[in-house]
Amino acid sequence: DYVPNGYHPAYIGEVLTNDQNNISYTLIRKLGWGHFSTVWLARAKKIEIKNSEVQSNDLKYVAVKIVRSAKHYTETSIDEIKLLKKVKNFNTNNNNNIGQHNVIKLLDDFTINGPNGNHIVMIFEILGENLLSLIKKFKHNGIPTILVKQIAKQILFALDFLHRNCGIIHTDLKPENILLKINNTNVLKLIDLISNKKNLLKILRFYQDFLSDISISRKKINNNNNNNNNSPNKILHSDNFLSSLSLMTISNNIVNNSNFPTPPSSGSNHDTDLPDQKINNNNQLNDRLYNDSNLINAKIADLGNACWIDKHFTNDIQTRQYRAPEIIMGGSWGCSADVWSFACLIFELLTGDYLFEPIEGHSYSRDDDHLAQIVELLSCPNPHEDHDLVNLVNGCSKSSSFFNDNYHLQNLSSLRFWDLKRVLKEKYKFSELESRQISDFLLPMLNLNPKKRADAGGMINHPWLEDTFGMENVFNQERKLYNSGLDMPGWCSEVFHYTLY
Ligand code: ATP
Ligand code: MG
Ligand code: MG
Image: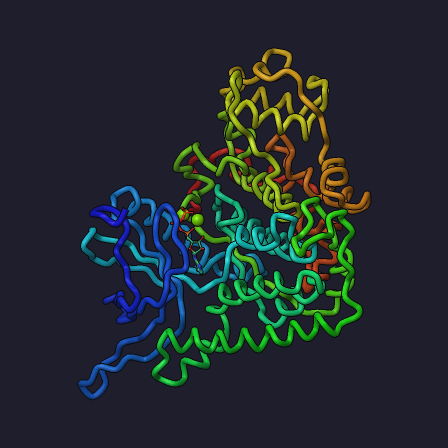
């Protein structure tokens, strides 16, 4: 892919300059990549001429997204920049928009010319790892509820802000596209709490990974910045030093702390691996973390597939597992499609598994299987009685290729109904109370009828999020719990002749 029209062959030490504002960016290391781009950690410098001498003043560390050069990618990223600028320039003076801080911030943009063509470059604030790697770090056993609630509340604020203030639909909400900024001291405490003596080695390894991932976002880099010769090696070196120091603290804690939560009994205690069976030790964690301060800051990133409520770029949206039923069936759609994906995402954070994971079979398509899984979880054996399902089926152009006149699926007959609350309790071993609370939270956002789906702003006020750590008394006065977003433009269909955006 590093060919003409492909990725820019960036390298460590390369300097990219925006000639318009005389800011240069020196690449330090690769942070990630995607279909559209490679993303790099870089140091920004302002170049100034003083007394006819060129001076460069260090600014700060940033993330540099270098887009592939083919026309399609360039055009898409021009739209991405417009969307990002809408988010950035939204005037918060008259509004109390917490959510603006939970969407990634564009700092600069320009074009560079390289051997593979012209590439758009976007500069972002630097963030830590994405939620998919957090899911993996918890070995697909689910992320502790205390963290999930923080992420959920913050992302709901972000969605409410995008939908109502910016007129933007993200259309690709999934773990990879949510990035975390992590308070390092508190991460130490958290990892301390979830560990036990048996898992000591594993936790230490885990921690080491974690620290190297988040190390770029911390203050000490800025401190390093004060002395002029801060090579990347030096930063790495200081990271290692810090991490070994913290590892020592952690291991001491683990060995000495007799109040440590006992490992949940799982049957298979013969090695240090986490048990295969889904376990749930969130209560212990919740109890012990209550007196702490806010741990994390979650931000929606990658607006590369986002669109305007009055300008949908395509109907082919959303990553499979997070795709709303109206998209599968060719119906009209809007902001409410994001809310569906959000609910799928929260389930996945809590359990480590996809909510829906459709596959193709001999006699049915992947779409058939997807709709079957949705019906099994959210509807009832007699579809006539489900007005929301009837509404959805009647409202979508491709319905007849999936459902017959009696609202039964055509290509899959023997459905096994298993409602969300029971899945949480029976498969994932959440308590009766937690299973009820979580399904009460998720189900309004999984309403089959997009018109009636609960809006992000109102869901901020849900009782499940009331005790969100660090955001206990934060509510959204402007929206009502469980109300649909039907009163806002673009909620469930594209807006025509709308001039605001
Ligand atoms: P996609 O194929 O998902 O559309 P993309 O080419 O548009 O990808 P992004 O999703 O924006 O690229 O970024 C790719 C990866 O780079 C992210 O998953 C993340 O790991 C990393 N990354 C992006 N932005 C930042 C940032 N601001 N700070 C730290 N890491 C980042
Ligand atoms: Mg992405
Ligand atoms: Mg993208």
